[in-house]
Image (cartoon, rainbow, N blue to C red):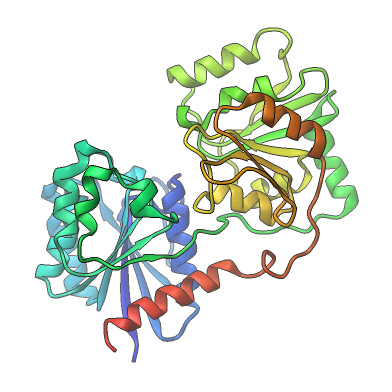
Length: 365
């Protein structure tokens, strides 16, 4: 039996979005299995999206408002998926109403529905959450203890009668193996006149705590690299830029902007520390952490549930907003690289695809 799965996501490469990258990695891994045909319905990209890796791409939606619903209905009718699997949220959806109606539309077209919830929801999302939660189907989450820790207590009714399946996230950048000369030259390129390379990797938002890097790192020795998408006109980035343009940090911060997966992996392979001082705590759902660990980097992040140094993954978990703890961890562990570990250095996306395949099969058991 061939199962036809249509993934729906508002963002997909070359669009820049963490959940778009997740969708790309999932689609590519699923397509390796001959028992699945994979399609992706997404936004009209700024650049051409070619069908590749056995995945059929349908970049048909201009804006995710109700007037576009006919394009989605037409694609579903023509491609004839057995399962429609919708990702929530994505940057590409914007504030459109249509994403919240997709489960109803798919169900009325007699398609089996799967949803993946990557984030929590606030009380203001209650009407929209009602629309997507009343539809029969399967629910995947990427964050452990989603009901207890992620979803607002007043919204837990959305999970009544639902079996929630946790399928963990993984790195969206590959592992790279650079020679010693390559590492030396690349690190020298980034370091300028400093001695240690300190990297923030990911999208730059206020809840990521990027401004804390200036308090955690040492201006006498460290070059800060912000490797991620930034809004140069936004108030938050202006705050960061102002800090970088004053003593003692003048010329000691570099913003690379968005990097290709290969370039990001290479940077992670030579950094002395990746610092991710998230204001709401990091965890296994965060692909930036996975990417850094996969490439052997020492990581400092925050956590609501863990504390201290995890030697196996080379991560130090600090308390949220505890600058001194993160500063002390940097002093002790900077430059540490983890060794090979069979549990980490494996094809995590294939395992994730296998778990999804089992979920899809359960519809037909």
